[in-house]
Length: 108
Image 1 (cartoon, rainbow, N blue to C red):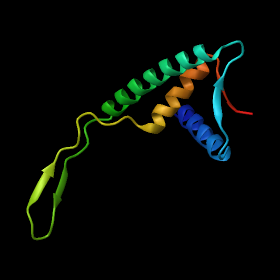
Image 2 (cartoon, rainbow, N blue to C red; image 1 turned 90 degrees about the horizontal axis):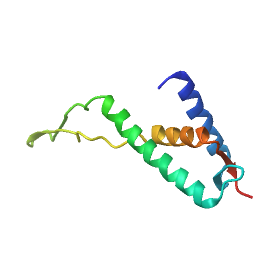
Image 3 (cartoon, one colour; image 1 turned 135 degrees about the horizontal axis):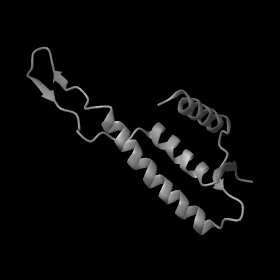
Image 4 (cartoon, helix red, strand yellow; image 1 turned 45 degrees about the horizontal axis):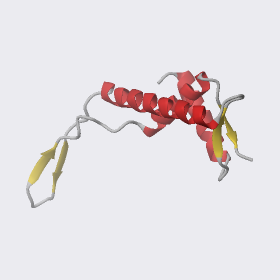
């Protein structure tokens, strides 16, 4: 992740943290709720796939050795299909929606 992406992620995280319990929604002028839901669904799918690819590109995690001092020892191989990084997924979702002209705003 480049510096620009890290800065955007940090800014988004801080904005969400500072908003407290405020309800936020994606809004775009002259766009009805049906279109917003469709765009959000498409962006969520793209973000999830991209986050999975990102996790896979980082390589396979190392095996985990499990045991007790006097008991048997076993080696556990982590999943070959890691779960997507939720922070990367959220950042990618936000980027997709902004590219489509939406803004994340506080509900009134």
